[in-house]
Image 1 (cartoon, rainbow, N blue to C red):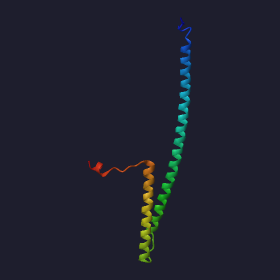
Image 2: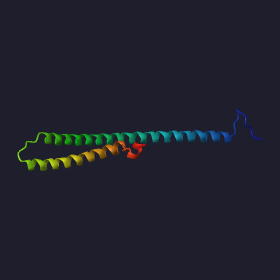
Image 3: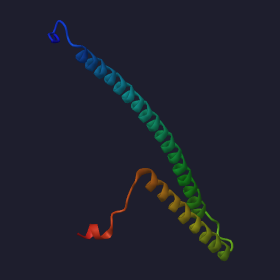
Image 4: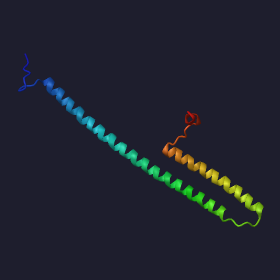
Length: 119
């Protein structure tokens, strides 16, 4: 018969303890690895957000320039002004669509359906 007292634990108990300790070490290494990958992804996400914010700011500046130009346009030939005005309006609409798309994709903003607002 095998002695299983505290002074002389069995080989099975020693093996189980050693196995559990090894599993703990492995799990700690996995957790550390996952934390590092998570941090890398957060850094990557932050860099992408900075880039998108810069793009958004560039679009805002372009829109501001177009609107300012429209505001201070000299009236020489009414048809030319009307033509430029239409071109600028199309350009503004296009840039605002891009801006809205960037905001929606970046910040996951979803419009509330009209039916949900009515209820």
